[in-house]
Image 1 (cartoon, helix red, strand yellow):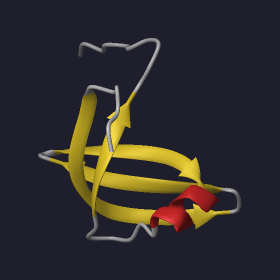
Image 2 (cartoon, rainbow, N blue to C red):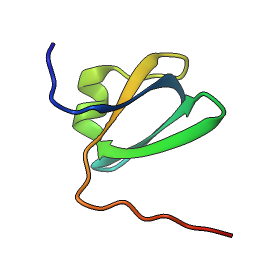
Image 3 (cartoon, helix red, strand yellow):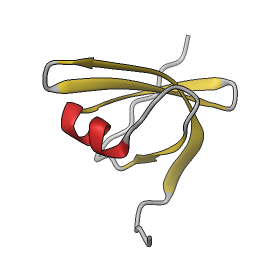
Length: 68
């Protein structure tokens, strides 16, 4: 599969919660966690479950930075 998205974050699924039409999927990416909200249908089609390898593709029109 070829994709134009360059921001790829490979990780491991640590949690999948399906609630109605949405699914919340958490990935462990190195020392960090990424949370994705996707459709429940897409989650079922991808057959995502804890321990699976998955890659988060990030495509955004804006990025916010926070400094503490």
